[in-house]
Image (cartoon, rainbow, N blue to C red):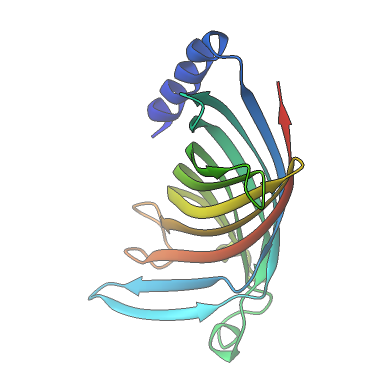
Length: 198
């Protein structure tokens, strides 16, 4: 995964000088209702809700043929507590968040209508999930696949996006805590940001 991300960064760096249009999107988001699905050995699954959260991020794009942007990005999703009594049966103050680094694509669907631009978003990369509780043994960070898809609009360089994203993570082999368990975090976010062109 790291080699893939390095290759994407190099591709953007090599292509950038050939094109006049590059964009940097800076954004903040509100995570509506994150959920975490825990899969135990034997395919036993339980899904838990988290409290709403916030995110910050940035994407850098180079536009191909004026309608397709390719680039890289990063976002950080702040920790939020798990909801409900099921988690509190074994630990209090259980939280999770993540930092995601990804390759991105931004195809433009329409321009110069009611808004300046309507576009799709696709993201694929690596997520670093941080899990913590008031029990010391349950504090760790794990890497895993991250992907996201969404729709955005732009007006006077102000951007508004609706994003759906997924983080996959699990414990490393030999972990003393719940070896063989895997986790899937799903999030819906509303992002507000600003686009810089250069």
